[in-house]
Length: 603
Image 1 (cartoon, rainbow, N blue to C red):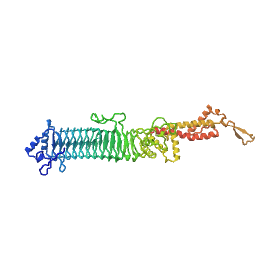
Image 2: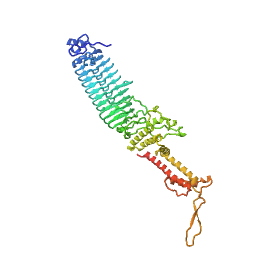
Image 3: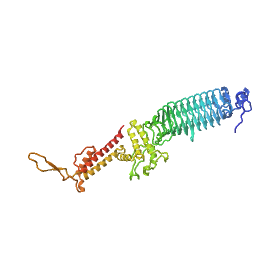
Image 4: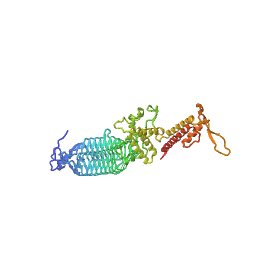
């Protein structure tokens, strides 16, 4: 129930009066003050709204409500501002070390002109510190908050320490201003459902120590401003929400969290985010200087203690996954050992200047033989694919059958046709990623992106028909010059067909002979030699065209054709045309095989 408070009648005071008196605690005479203090006892329900405490007066109050060893004990405590007067003011040091608050405690609008110490204090009920102004050092080291702790709008002009504090309810620091250094080293925000800590719109003017801080629920730093460095690694069992946060100085931050929302984050200086477990979104982030997102192989430690005992232990769950890059200028982004199999690259800028280091993982096509489609049996070539192609493949279209789209939906959900990229969009992304890898001399990695780019061009309806036909042939014969095995099989097939054609139509029955006609003049003259047409044709019977000798002769012609040489064999008129075609096509297939093999081993 609400109470009716009467203001002190002392001039310019306005504090709450002591029950049965007309003055507040500060303006009582000595006998009345002693009587009022004697009425207090450990566990008392106190109300000091608007009171201006001196150091001596506060020591007298704590002594009156103190238990053994000087520990103050309160039930419900009211120290906030009245609606039309100044808040409770502590003119000297305020010692609350080890204090126990059984009920709710209200400090809203209070002012601490000097030191404020709450080390090892226990708050069983809700703790309200909204809009409190701390002009001196403030300490909540090893404080325990069993319910909600509200520090919204708090102002700390000097050092603030919350090291090893426990927050069982939400720890709310919305719009707080920390002008001095602040430390949450090894603090523990234990609320499981919803938000466990809220630092949204908070401002950190000096270094912020968060090393070893743990958050069981969501930790929100939305629109927070860090004008100095962040120190240490944090662990969040849910989501670390940093949407719209600004980092204005160089930063090195360790994060172990299930999800990290860095949408619209602003890094005005160099930054290095060392991540574990996290699925990261970077949509619309502003990166003015180089920013590194990397997988941290070693667990985060606080002294000899590992910080990640409660994180999931499934195999592969430690990997860092990047989900979105749309709206990001990727020229200043460095990704090291990051899983990009679910990353949406579309909509980013300067993607061809992104730096990809270490082992960055991408998606893969469906595996195994599949029935249907254009061929009775088909399989997808093993390569690295981006998620945009997976979305595009999962949508049946005029150039794709149901068999073509089968298996591309695994783990992605059903794509929205209105938002899925076109083949041309996917080709652009592949082209930019290919250039980024080529600039780092990673030719084998760039080869898969070149394959993806050519695939999109082949399936693009806007590609001219002649060019599409050429691309289909290029894909079928050599996998765009990237599949050495396919080119070798094509070469062997071409050689086999050439051998067969030569045996059927190209090799004559016997070597050519000549015969002389006319007489040789006594005094010399012209002699005419004419070829003997006998034996110039192929055998009449089909079975006579297949023999070991003819196979050997045809093979010699084909092998010489592959290396672009003439075999010197006598051929029929048809055989000469067959040889010319072989000398034109088969060296091309051999060159494609060599080119594909070189692309895989080149560094």
